Amino acid sequence: MRNFIIKRILLSVVILFFVSFIIYTLLRCLPSSYVETMARQLSMAPGAKPYSEWLAQLEGQYGLDLPLIPGFLHQLGNLLTGNFGDSWKFTVPVVDKFASVIWISFVMGGIAFILQLIIAIPLGVIAATKQYSKADYAISVFALAGISLPTFFFATLLKLIFSVKLGWFDLVGLTGRDFYQLDAVGQFFDMAHHLVLPIVTLVVIQVGSLMRYTRTNMLEVLNSDYIRTARAKGLSEKKVIYHHAFRNTLIPLVTIVGGSLPSLFAGALITETLYNIWGIGYTSYTAMTAGDIPFSMFYLLFMAVLTLAGNLISDILYAVVDPRVRIA
Image (cartoon, rainbow, N blue to C red; front, side, top):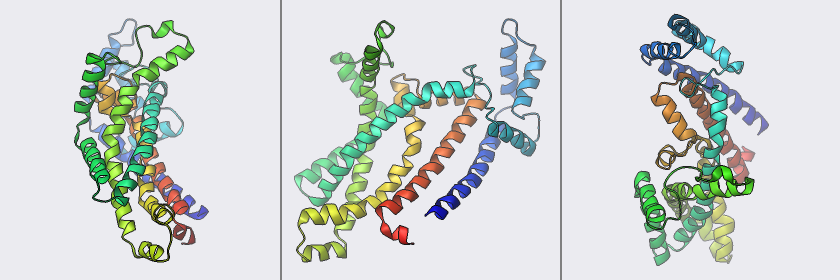
């Protein structure tokens, strides 16, 4: 298993190298006039350097004055030394801006993901073990409704009911009007109160697919020959379901668990935009639409690293839930 992990890590490094090259190539395809526009805007600030110096600095800093391959190697050297540059859109170091918004998205995504597991897996198992019953139909309707509802519609519906009609929550924002007048505990609960509707939106919209996936895999396992053998041997239904069937159902589910790592940090673009929460999803969207090359490249590389790490975690979890992988 150790050798397998080492091989996967080395392979991930190679993949990351080529992904970095693709991202850099795509960013180089942006209109060069944007760099000129940025240099012109920066030169118009009071006491700023002239346009020609800003243009030469921006092109030299990111290797835009070099051919594609040398420019990529120049940028790769900056990344390896931790020089990620400054954000053009937010005029602060990329790392500082990234660190200021990433944890909001992580908290939202992490809480929503845990709630999805708590809700979806048990309901999926119940729907599979009670196939074609009223419980199965009710769970299936709930799952399909969550899958079918557009995020913007469901979020707007929640805001209409709980913000406009009932007045329980603010329409947008992460903090209330008196946030800075509260103590530390009060500020914590104020932010938690504002995150209720966004987290509910994420859970309801995403829980349906995991619920259906669990039900489908559980039904496939329950129809296997070894399950019929276990029942023929006189084992209790509870032991057949939760000791034999459910363990094998976990094997395909670990793919979703491992693959969900990037989503914990990626942010929920639509949800954050609708609730005006400056998480990483909303921030990265703003940076990309503004042509912020430094922030966009750092964000895309960060997501590539998380995706590769998620795949590695999935492989390790396979070995945890399936002894045959460890034997191999």
